[in-house]
Image (cartoon, rainbow, N blue to C red; front, side, top):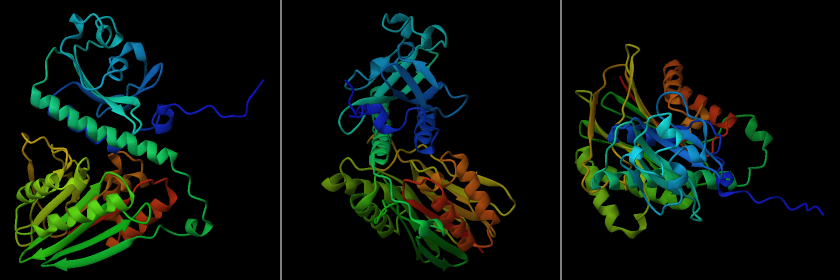
Length: 393
């Protein structure tokens, strides 16, 4: 007897992450974790019944698939919280697995990543060839990194389960529509583009002139729709209202306010917040887990403004905000985008370089925004797209 009832998808299948290509939204987590914890590897692994797939690995060849019994993560997904193994060669549970015997790993720490229903479908893990142990502060930080990765997994599940939008021949004929803003201040030109995935965007950007300074903010709240949009707008307003503070002071003040407001509990956002001194070209900034800002110098060189900060809402109280500084001069461009913009290219950090190339090639920011909007229309982009461009005249 046969049945036409389809077999229910497993929790892992519902995320759509097994065997999916690299994405910067995961890679920036593992890249930052590898640097901060100073380990050989930081990975996001997707754990199925029999196999483990490495979704994110910041450097080197991708591990791909491994038998579940050959790695630590099969045990991690059984845990309620962090699994830490100081020296796997001295632990009878792990000393004979391939990660230890073939790849020489001794230290492991992993955090289980769960869906909204509580199903463990992956891990964020650290591996190193030297035996070691984490401090209490490092454990708290790793748990915060795990929450960040878990939020991305849950967003993937929501995207995968969302009904496909009906085909619209009219939309295919032209670029996606978005809100565009322009302004200028003391030799600094500013322009932004916002293309929401739905009616309301979870991204928000803005700027203002304060004397000879320009305050620029881009906030990308995890999630989409009205709730995320309301938080994004509130964060933007709060940071812009602190126009007289340096970026670190502004972030600390907003962070304190958010912690005291129950609406923002368990909500976090990646943020780029900068103060530009128009006369000297000095850009002081704080990057909270964003990492998607590029300076294109007039001489053809470029630099990405990254940092070691976690997103706003995830910073442990005993970790300080790390500020950044860069200088821009006549003919230079600064572009900051939300991670949805990367989906219009190849979804990896390489997309940021391609965005920079398109901006250089465009006659002006309007032409660049038209090209970006066209790419959004012709690629599978399941997130809000925001871009801010600052030009020095």
